[in-house]
Each structure stands twice: as structure tokens, then as C-alpha cells.
Image (cartoon, rainbow, N blue to C red; front, side):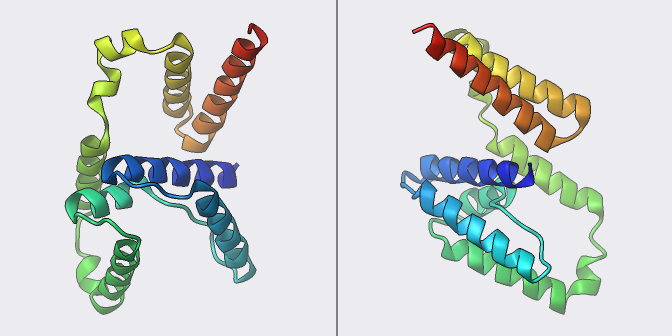
Amino acid sequence: AFALVALMESLMTAKLVDDITDTHSNKTREAIGQGIANVVTGFFGGMGGCAMIGQTMINVKTAGARTRLSTFLAGVFLMVLCLAFGPVVSQIPMAALVAVMVLVAVGTFDWHSIAPATLKRMPIGEITVMVVTVAVVVATDNLAIGVVIGSITAMVIFARRVAHL
């Protein structure tokens, strides 16, 4: 389940960045690269990972980043910050870090997508997937379960639509 959620988040992040920067990324290469990296990391006792929308939006929108070099430099900066200034960084209140992430999330969200006029134009199947996914995440407090149930809902709706053609 983790690999599926991680892959979906990475591909969603790549699509979002493509839209913002008017570029095109190779999603197949993204998926293969992430899979290989996660398998190799497992051999060394590490944890799997994926692209994170929050950090990516900070890079793209705040810093104006346009290439993958920005991700590398952000990682190096965070490593130096933690290693050289660990005691100072540990004094930052968790509430301040949460506030930064909330502001990034609010700034990233496309509020137009849930406007009544937009929802009226959307197919009922897409609205159903959106509502089911959000409801499951809120009810279970587990993003992975929400994404899996939302994906299953989308598959069922797609299968019903194709069966009626």
C-alpha cells in the first residue's frame, strides 16, 4: 500500500509541477527511478520515499525553482542546517513549522476546483471519487487508506462506464 500511495503522490506532484512550470516530465522514468531508489534504499536499511507536494511547492512557488537541481540544493541546505545548527533548529516551536506547512497547503490548493460552478460542470463520478476519498481520510485519519479506497472507487466507476458503452 505504501508503494502505491508513494507512487501516486510522486506522479501527482510531477503533474502539478508540469502544470505550474509549463514543462513536461517523463512519468515512466519517474516511476522506474523511484522504484529502483526505494528497493536499493531497503538493502541499506533505509526507508522508502517519494516526491512531497509540500516541499515541492515551497521550492517552485516560493523559491521560483524550475529544475531538479533545486531539490538537490534544498536537501543539501536542510542537511547542513540540521548538522551544523541542530541545537538552534530544535528551538523552533513545532507550531511554527506546522503554520508554514498549513500556509503552503492553503496556497497550493486550487480553490476554484470546489466552486459550485466548477462542480456543476464535473461528471458525477469525479465528484463521487473526491467526496469518498476525503470522507475516508477524515474518518480514518489515514491518507493511505483514503487514497486506496478513492482509487478503488474510481476503478469501479470507470468499469461501470466502460461496461455501458
